[in-house]
Every structure is written in C-alpha cells, then in structure tokens.
Length: 233
Image 1 (spheres, helix red, strand yellow):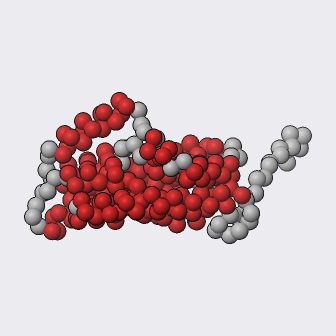
Image 2 (cartoon, rainbow, N blue to C red):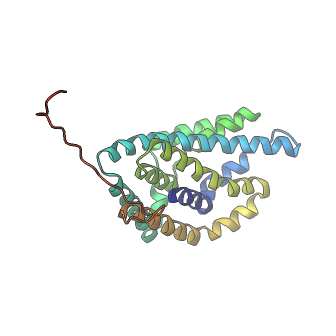
Image 3 (cartoon, rainbow, N blue to C red):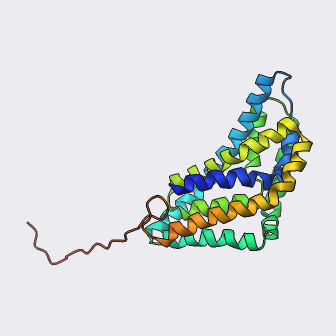
C-alpha cells in the first residue's frame, strides 16, 4: 500500500506546481454568499468535483492497467512510471509542455467561462468537474502511476488521493488570494522535483519485486497446466 503515501505526497507537493494554472480559476470562482459557512461549502463542492473527475480518469486508465497486469506486465509498468518521473526531474520544462489537444482545451475554456458566469453550489461543482480535465503534466504523471498499479479500483483511489492532496493548497489560494499564490508558486520548482524523486523511487521499488513487505512485495507468477489426457472420474 506504499502507493497511498505516494499519491498523497505527489498531490501535496504537486499542488504547488498546479497553482500556475488552477490558481487564477480558484480566484475567479463566483462568490455565492458573504456567509463563511456557505462560502466554504461551495469551495469544498468545487474540490469534490475535481476529485471526482480524477477518480473517473484513474478508473479508466486503471482498467487498462488491470488488463496489462493480467498479461504479466505490472512490474514493468511500475518501473516505467518511476523512470518517467525521473525523466521529468532531469527535464522539468517538459512538465509544462505536456498539454492536451487544442480543441479539448478550447472547449474547456468555453465551458469554464460559461459556468463562471453562474452562481450556486451546482455551478461550483461543475467548475470542479471541468477543472479536473485541464491539461497538467503532474496529472498525466499521476495517471501513469494509476496505470502502473494494475487495478481499476486502485487506479481510481490513487487519483482521488492525489486530488485530495492538492486540495489544501488550492483552498488556501481561494482564501488568501494572490499573495499566497505568488509565494507558493515561487517555492514550487524544488518541491516538485523532490516529490517526483520520492514517488519515482517508490514505484521503481514496487516493480523491482524484491520481496520487501508493503514497499516491494514479491509477485509470484504461476502457470497452470491442464492435463488433457486425464481420465474423467
């Protein structure tokens, strides 16, 4: 279950990287009420929508990973996920170049702009759902990690934990505004590098099949043989 820690760590530190894209959207969220209770409820619903989208994405890639794991490729997937993270430590600018299709980005901007004009808890929830689809290099890395787990449910849970890990910082941005956004974004570079290194190490260990409980569990591959010549009883 080391991947649970990896998901939370990746989310907590990765949120600093995502401030550059999600920060302006957090600051632009419509104000539904002057009541602190209503305000916080709307922001939590917004985060819930984003986490739900991450969970659906994680479930989708997890299904693919589960089929690949059935084919005996789970260890290689874990190693590949770890090596991919190490690659982006060596080339951090690559995170910013991992963008989705332009048509998808254009559609998202249009939908976000439309929902930003509306008020109410449902609009904040919808903005969160759409926010989860915004192109982000760290989200793609988290999805690669979900794929490497080789389980649909684990993939969904990994992405949801990743989303939960990013929530405190994004909530802080909505509360304290531009000042905290600039300070946190300044510290994001080194934090993201350290986080990717830790997460990469955990996934490489997972794929190394060293027999270490919880960290690198031994995966036994058994082959079944069918005796076609046995006599029926």
